[in-house]
Amino acid sequence: MTTENKTTNTPTKPAKAQALTAVKGMNDLLPPASAQWEWLEDKVRGLMARHAYHNLRTPIVEPTALFVRGLGEVTDIVEKEMYSFEDRLNGEQLTLRPEATAGVVRAVVEHNMLYNGGQRLYYMGPMFRHERPQRGRYRQFHQIGAEALGFPGAEVDAELILLAATLWQELGLQDVRLELNSLGQPNERAAHRAALIAHLEAHADVLDEEAKRRLHTNPLRILDTKNPAMQSVVEAAPKLIDFLGEASLAHFNAVKAILDASGVAYRINPRLVRGMDYYNLTVFEFVTDRLGSQGTICGGGRYDYLIEQVGGKPAPAVGWALGVERVLELLKEQGTLPEATGPDVYAIVPDAAALPVVFKTIQTLRAQGVSVQMHAGAGEGMGSMKSQFKKADGSGAQFALIFGGDELARGEVTLKSLRDGAGAQEALPLADVTVRVAAKLALGVVSSQSVA
Ligand code: ATP
Ligand code: MG
Image (tube, rainbow, N blue to C red; front, side, top):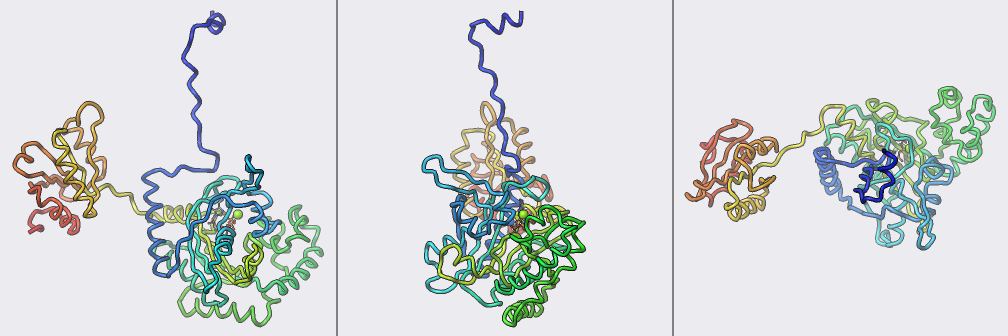
């Protein structure tokens, strides 16, 4: 019977299409969590404005060559984490940006932005890396970054580190510590590299496959290994700091002096090398122990040679990037993420006939900065008062503003408190609604006496 059914020619409904889901490791950001992102972004915008850093927005897609040249061929990102593809129409090799510094540098060079001195810039946005998704590690994640280009001095390194430290303070982040190192200059690194390779070769028996592969391409990155079996060799390795010349040391000391004077604590971590090849002199990370192995919330440093590498006139630069998901996760872990709040006012509309007055009134309220959620009918008409009040409560609003027919006929509306002193209500002349509601919200009180 069933087979017969299947072969009949009677038109049947098409099979229900299977629902599509987001790409693995890439997340939708829904309310109310999205409000917490906006809260963070607002804090950052305010802070950047107070430091005279300006917003730069670059494309999410860049030529693949930008990252290969900028980040270095033998880096985790370029070797295995990039979303690269060929443009089907013109064959261009493109990549979803895995980080934003290279794009910032490209834009700064392309628009000749350093012709008249330095630039202090910041960005926010999604980055893409093909990694194993886990808590604090995603394939589409978000960074906020700050970059100062065209400034050689240690004071700008310090300014950027202090900027990040101030952000933690203003967000109420706890248990974040600063790790600091200096990578010196290329010639100093070359001398260190030779000594390092000799040391690692002398202990070739304990090196893992990855380390062996990197021994002659990028031995510095071996110091970053998480392999427990290699820890003692790595710890005994020659330290770059012992190879730094006078100028590099002076730069490092100047950064430290400003941090000391500003009361910002740090730990020198001689093994801090960072994932990209472009860094020199100062490098730093802000880390926490509260997020497991995804404990780096922000990393950065000086990259005086990147601009030239990307084809610009040589100019120094320094910057950092923070991981938005990790910062928010840490706040959540602490229990100090701000709760999402409801609107100030929920407009209850017993009868659709009142809608013209409702719109007029709530538009003036909104123009004064009061947030208003208007009741919308779910079926025929506006719905019962009971269901409207239920919605008003569920919205988290402070007040319900009731546009009842009788009150409107008297030129009034009713304002009812839904939170503090819930139930208290009073009639307000329509003409005064905006002033009275704004005053109540500013005072945060419901009693009618407080609004003389
Ligand atoms: P990690 O060592 O954790 O892989 P990274 O050194 O690759 O970090 P950077 O390239 O310095 O990270 O990026 C700056 C910040 O961006 C990191 O400190 C982290 O907070 C965040 N970040 C990096 N990769 C991811 C990711 N895949 N998912 C979420 N956040 C990330
Ligand atoms: Mg990484």
